[in-house]
Image (cartoon, rainbow, N blue to C red):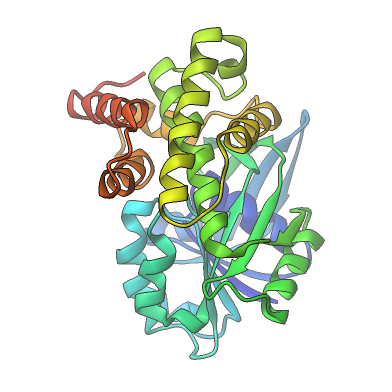
Amino acid sequence: MKIAVVGPGSMGCLFAALLAEGGNDVLLVDYKPERAAMISASGITIEDGGRERTARVAASADSGSVSDRDGVIFMVKAGSTRAAAERLATAAAPGAWAMTMQNGLGNAELLAGLFGAERVLAGTTAQGANPVGIARIRRAGRGDTFVGEFSGQATPRAEQIAAMLSGAGIPAEVAPGGVSALLWKKAVINAGINPLTAVLRVRNGELLERPSALATMRAAAAEAAAAARSAGVDISEADAVELVETVARRTAANISSMHQDVAAGRPTEIDFICGAIAAQADKHSIPVPVNKTLLNLIKAMSEGGLQV
């Protein structure tokens, strides 16, 4: 399959490299021409289990380069989705699909508005990768990946994409229960792990080893599940806690994307995670004090220019 992966961050590089190794024709889309040229020349290097290998992946900063792609996978930060999608929606072939594999809520809806809902899918993944350098990453976790149509229907297209990912070493299934449930489950995971690892400056697995951190992670996930239920997605508190603990365990060595962003002084996705959860909860007068506290803490760290 001819695929464009949008975003040269850790996860974008991981997916681009693995899909290329799986026999797909992959184009990594960047917004920096110099970096795109460097990636095209040198490839993407993955450190995995003490060994490293390099996958050859073409990269481009030209939006027109996606015109021959069967599909476009968005892996940019949530705050950059609109700008990237506006660049690519008119350049992509009319029949090409667009799929978000990003953190946060609202990305699928944004893509649907620009590409058309019938062309949009959403996915979540518990795979993990940390940056080592430009187009050089360390694989830091393996976990479940799910994809689904924006419409919520089961389609051969979704099955084909899941099979493509699985064939590239990213075991994937079509999401049971529709895309809304898929995205809210991801929000539960993100809310429990990402901001807390950024505040405490720890890897994902350490949240399980510190009793107070574990209690906070569980509380954030439980609140997110309550917000999800108000949006019509049935996630019990017990299921939410089990889900977030399982992902933290499977990605124990991973440095979350929010931890990386805070450390580098970059904008975070907190508004699309705890912020979106709080907004949904407020509509129904559901108390989510832990998520609101995490939202404010991450914002305060960014406002102060704190680097960790």
